Length: 296
Image (tube, rainbow, N blue to C red; front, side, top):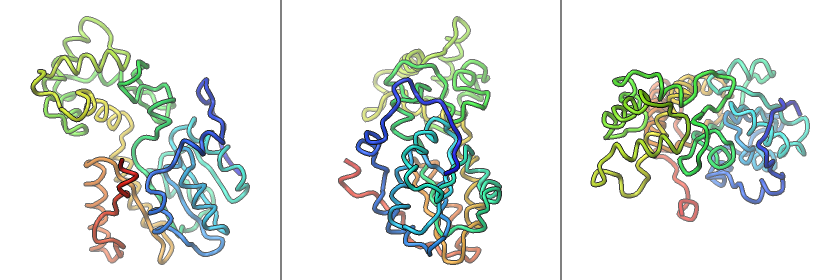
């Protein structure tokens, strides 16, 4: 197996533990729609994460090969350990799926019979990466999937002009109180640095009057989403990747995308409708939803 090396957190996860506690989302649906594939065919997982989908697909399609990409080197290193039993059938690359075609070409993948993009965060990134994706832990306000890039969430909070910061929160977080929050953050940063998740969450909560705070989610949820999406240019990557994925598909190949919030969903729906007008077959008239047990 070809894979990069990377530092993992101070409490490295045992592979057995990883397989026990990490169940990839919508696994049954992924296997149903993306397998079987012809012997020797390539499968591309553009968001490898901890390798849960990849391991299941490789076990299910026993003669397939898999190219796995991920922006997060720590996740990729854990996935490499998980996928080691599949040996030379697996090629892993530390890369953004916005470079899907270039990475596939460099790895000798002429076409793929199945491509999966599982968008959003993994439980590992939320709970154990130490990069400030969650307001439930006091961590550095980083939020980068790929730590090689320079701009962090703290940089955005500290440097972005107030109107632009409000626009980020409204556009990428769909935050109704975007202007209030931006105003509070700009006022606070004039007095001190905002560098941790706790500081940010407290400022956001204080910016929203109690009677206007959301009832079902934390007051800072949308702000954290907005900053993460902006830091990693998640929608830009998705918009760039989908046409490349369609172009990379073999005849009768399939592309599956798992979206978690409405912004991703809109991009996928709009692009798939365009694919339909261009002659591609959209396999499902409506989105496929997770089972009730999985939602709970």
